[in-house]
Length: 253
Image (cartoon, rainbow, N blue to C red; front, side, top):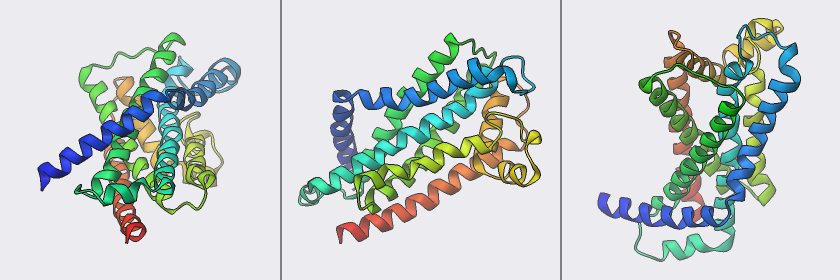
């Protein structure tokens, strides 16, 4: 049964990835907005922002990476919605395949597409002057956190794709997620914010994730932020997965 599931998931993931390679504009579009934000904040607004860092692009990049992921997972909801509308799910279910493999194929495709977009954003940041003395283990830790965050948000996207009534609604859920880093430590220290905003910023998931990635890049002790970040990512992932599977069973029943 396990072999059956992995085989079906691999086959369906290959199908979804082929669709991605035929429309690379989705990956480019996903990377354009975060890169535009990075250019705007570094070259236009950066001189007026006191981040406490010698290089604002170094300070900014962790938040931009999260915005990249939040932007990318909207396409997962869109592709899932279109598959549901086209009736291809019914055709898959008439075949002897593991039913959950259909969802996992979309999730893994999202992971691959987002990783490509993240690499593009990091390369642009390097051109803009981003530098890090982080070692291999620190980079692996950053990659692990970003992968976990991508999986958590992707399962939220699955819920949206299964529940949306229109194609616009399928992708619109990502807008609040894209805006969330703006009310965090991603662009400015939370200490500069008014008290009510600061209280929210310091207790939402993006701040702990951004702080952890920033500390790893700058070779600073990560403290408790890393455990808070992991708890947020795992908590969102587990809850989103459960609700996604419930929504999926409801749609195919």
